[in-house]
Length: 85
Image (cartoon, rainbow, N blue to C red):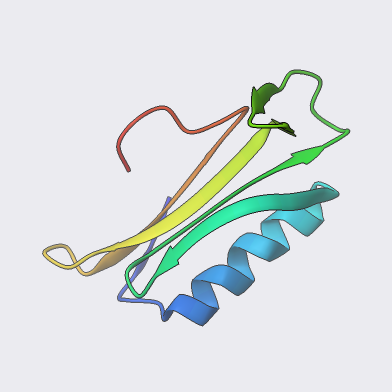
């Protein structure tokens, strides 16, 4: 999905963390920048997972701003996002 305009990095982090809380997931790792935030983690509510390093990951949520369209896109996947976002 998407929202109109550019969300600040802190707002994207907060929204993604709320998404993790909604499915009782915990964040294991993440990448942030002013235009992009991606968190990966795990929840017992999803059966399958992948082992990344020494961590089981089964939820990945990312947000990024697309300047040409002036939209902030949200991408979520399980166990991880495997396409460009």
